[in-house]
Image 1 (cartoon, each protein chain N blue to C red):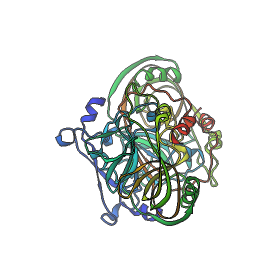
Image 2 (image 1 turned 60 degrees about the vertical axis):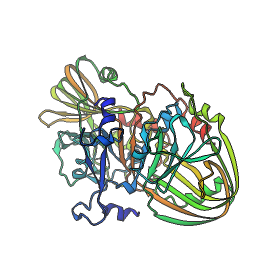
Image 3 (image 1 turned 120 degrees about the vertical axis):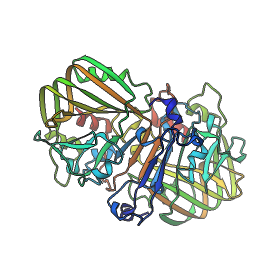
Image 4 (image 1 turned 90 degrees about the vertical axis):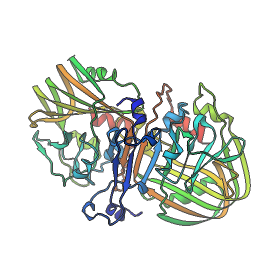
Length: 263
Length: 263
């Protein structure tokens, strides 16, 4: 079906039947929405500079209540928490965005608390990741984390809105703003993707932060804290919608491009 | 939610609303089932030797009516056509499989004829792929092909059932059987995946063949024909269920492993 027509087509609406409402399908292993990571576009497309939003947040919210991502024209860092979407602008300001705005890249899920762990005396992002590694049993699945606490230090960044013709992501992030917050209460939303995910998303961890008062946040660069509570959601379903943008951008060395934008 | 419990959970059932049944959602871009490629597990997991089937064909048929894949214990080549699943055994025999059998790896869709093209004087698989390349506009999407014709020659293969502990795929295919068919009428079902799909599936083309009388087939190695009709379906939704198998297999050089099994 042609692209333009397709956009007019009404979406598949998933009627999720809960445990026990049908015994005849006990062998089914199709993931429910709670067990599915829903992704808009691919990291490869974003790396190549496809920043045009094409899915509204009203639509995105049908697929999850927590997540991370970015905005039309790469205008800031996205954190979805408790079904609200916040934009951390490069100025440091945080705004809740209207449902009519659109995203070019995001990953969300209905958060389902599978594992809980108390974390203590974490001195760095590396150490946080090592702690969370212990929770990851099946390296083929996806994991979403929510970490609540008062953090001694948070180092985070955001990126400025880009103008067309869009630069590739590794160029765009060169103008990032870095924020340092001390003794700040808030939440980290994190995603861990398997190695095989290649150009689809970023293998390993990726965290965004937002403060409890929803006034500060950003893409996490480093962190230190004494105590926090981590919640983990394991998902083994993955659902992706490809960007309707025709990408002429070619990313030749994906790993080095990802390194350039994640640090 | 824990794996064992999850397998008991009833699947999300997609109620696909057709064009025009709701004007309020014209901006939605979530793909309908017709525009979604549904994949069971990942090529990375299959390459590593995870051949235990975990999704029944009755469940798989809810996600598509054409596709390709393999069977529990890697027991032959799978081709789904007109909502029936056929196994091409390594002996060359073709059987329709019961709905209760399970697959460890497959990709299917509800075939939706977006583009039709007549093909003439195709001397090789390479030439067939070059002809189909002209139909692929957006290299970020997935494409499913159905090619009907009488083929001058078909070279195809199948693989024998494996015993545990399973060898990696590049070892398993060393025992493949190669079939050569002349002047045979039948259908090729093919899948084209984007470059960025990395360890998720095989970038580029992948065809399976079945004869009109459903007595011959296999994974396509080469082909030659004078005339055939190609039908193409563009899909921009991708839905994947991760294998519940804990993979301890590690595939270090994915590209060379894929080359070893596709040729």
